[in-house]
Amino acid sequence: MKLSSFLSFALFGAKTILLRKKEPILGTVIVTDKCNLRCKHCSVNNITAVIHPYEQIKSEMRQLYDMGVRILFFCGGETFLWRDGELTLRDLVIEAKRMGFLIVNVVTNGTFPIDLPEADLILLSLDGDRERHNEIRGDTYDTIMENIRNATADNICFYMAINQINKNTVRDVCIAARDTRNVRAVSFNFHTPYPDTRELALSKKEKAECCETIKQMIKEGAPVFNLKSAFPYLIENKFPTPCHQCVVIENGKVSVCGRCIDVPGLCEECGYFFVAEYTLLFRGNPKIIFEMLKTYLRYI
Ligand SMILES: C[S@@+](CC[C@H](N)C(=O)[O-])C[C@H]1O[C@@H](n2cnc3c(N)ncnc32)[C@H](O)[C@@H]1O
Ligand code: SF4
Ligand code: SF4
Image (cartoon, rainbow, N blue to C red; front, top):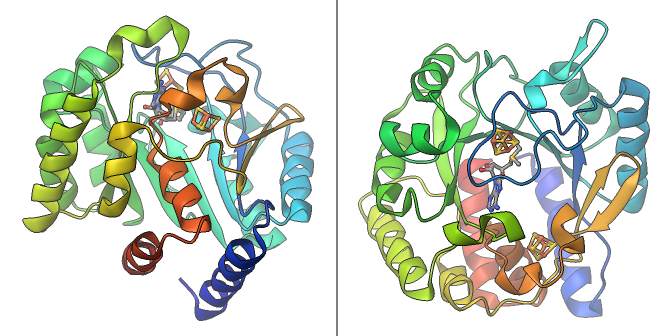
């Protein structure tokens, strides 16, 4: 991360904490909900299957920028399915950088060739060892690993949603993150139980066991892009929700925190680590502030 970006985030953080402000810093643009997969835990794929046009996405990016957002995520559906004529996802990333976003990240299922050197981080979903990942995501593990080997930059971070199917493979994903070329780290979430996937949710005890494994793996040198100090809050679901510093825009509709904000009762069972990490950070939790500085400077 550039020093100027770091200082800009530090100033935003200080103002938010001291003045209890609610302005956003992190924004997500949903470029399409179309997807080539139908993962068992996912409730947001292929609802409309519309790929939003370039001009619309550009104006949504501008809207987020004008709201103060400086960390931008592209998400889907599958982001690498995005096209408008000759334009691809890479053009969106380049345009976002040109517009002035300081960090531009992409979330992907990794099943398409990865040529996005301009992205700061590519969050690539890996949901366990080969067996568990394929059980959740169809037969994609080997293709993903091949695409990672052939990626044109080392800006990949695994992204694992831990659920009833893959809860015993956290260690495998940590080891894969440590040992796979082009992969910098792994970032975790717990399953967030939408009404149609409630059976995949973890109990408090299971969440605590996963957090113990992650802590142990950090001790053993695994590159984990999460904050240990947020674990107790995640286990108990005792962090403030929603996150007012995060916004998402999908087809012109802006939602605070996530598009899941409209699902009744879901925030009380939220499993997204970034929500716990950001809300605790912006409440001024000293341990979180210190750990976030250390972790972000290491991986971005
Ligand atoms: C919706 S996908 C979109 C991007 C891309 N298709 C992918 O799979 O990475 C974004 C991330 O959300 C995760 N996810 C989907 N449903 C979830 C849920 N109910 N709880 C937690 N994470 C979830 C996916 O595993 C993925 O890592
Ligand atoms: S690849 Fe991503 S968007 Fe597609 S079904 Fe899986 S989690 Fe959902
Ligand atoms: S706090 Fe609510 S809106 Fe935010 S990610 Fe969690 S479930 Fe979605």
